[in-house]
Image 1 (tube, rainbow, N blue to C red):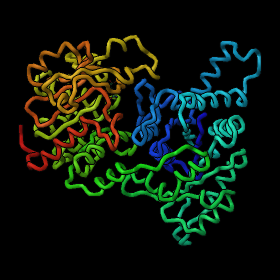
Image 2 (image 1 turned 180 degrees about the vertical axis):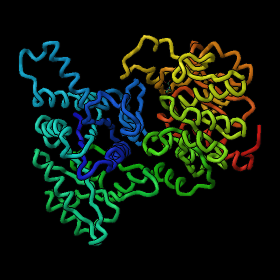
Image 3 (image 1 turned 90 degrees about the horizontal axis):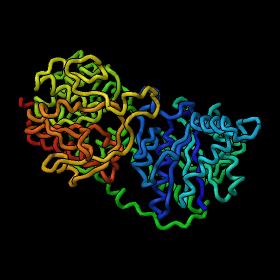
Length: 541
Ligand code: GLN
């Protein structure tokens, strides 16, 4: 029978519960245990697929096409836990399922209530990953203890220790221990209150992980232990990591977290193996070069909107022993101030995915700059579509060429709606989503980077390269280096005679891990580093 770990958060949001949960998963895997990760989100949206990146950051896509919370990205970067639609539930999804059952008459005339119907649905969701025969299921509860929305989730996980036995459930609570400058002291009161709230609803945390900017003294920990009713060794410090998120698991090991979990849950664990992780951090700390990469998007000011892209760039940097300096450039500022001014001196330009017309012209301008100056360019999803628009307008001379997403009656619709999308009106979960096969053309940069012929990548789009223009584009040097196996959908384009100009319709950033960088990101950073070394950037093509 699987053991369950529940991770809750208190005091404030954005404490890094996702990273902490992912780190716990990773440490248990590296002690030889099999793990499944799961996140329960208290908001009413059925999934984050329709939420603005300003509100929610990036939407993370899984192989099975689920559009999920970005914390699942941390899970996939830190662990090998396979994720699917059972890995992320929202209040919206839980209610939708209960209401559907009510409409089908499954409750046989009962009054349908939060307890037990909603909580039963939540418990069933938590038990699903446990049915895969794993050792441990780690369930992170989104939001902060005390939120109205979180209550049914907390009630459900409280009941689980009654259902499954206390010895099979472990409650970990992440809190903040703030430093007050005026008093020159760390303050434990918010943690006491937060644990107090948890205990009010019947959950006694087993372990407290305390986020702090300064180290906790033994006395601080003793005080927290006393007021929160836990042994002092169960008060674990998690100090802010300025250097890299990949340090978090190591610092948790330093404070004995993995041992504590293994002991409390009586898990059949092996010795901890972290050699490759130490090596990774060593490489990260000792880069041999530096490359400047501009990421040109309309959410440049939002640190989470392109989360997986920033991470994948870092992973590729680690592979090349290059420190990647990411410059977040707002595509609308390029429209205002010009690419010349904002992209001068960069070693690579990346245009990420997106929706809607705002900032499109700035992206097209950035791509033109990269293409004509021989600067390595990587386009992702909308970034590929913009690259096609740019090439259409400026190389093929197709005046005002555009995507029909932005200009329905364009005379040169080089990007157009996928056939399967033409009758779809619902916005939620209806794009071309998830893993799709892609066949590479041999002899291309794409094929060289992957080192194979067939790959599978994750998608999230409604528009595609318009096949009516294929011949024109290929004739002028924009090679289609990857397509769906039947050849009908363009998946990758690349430019002949350019050091590295490659754009993809899918999202490779979702399949990059720190110890296994994605081949296309690695290819891009390799080209940027080579270009920098040759000092060749800025030369007109
Ligand atoms: N808006 C474009 C489409 O729907 C690109 C999507 C994306 O970048 N994820 O096809």
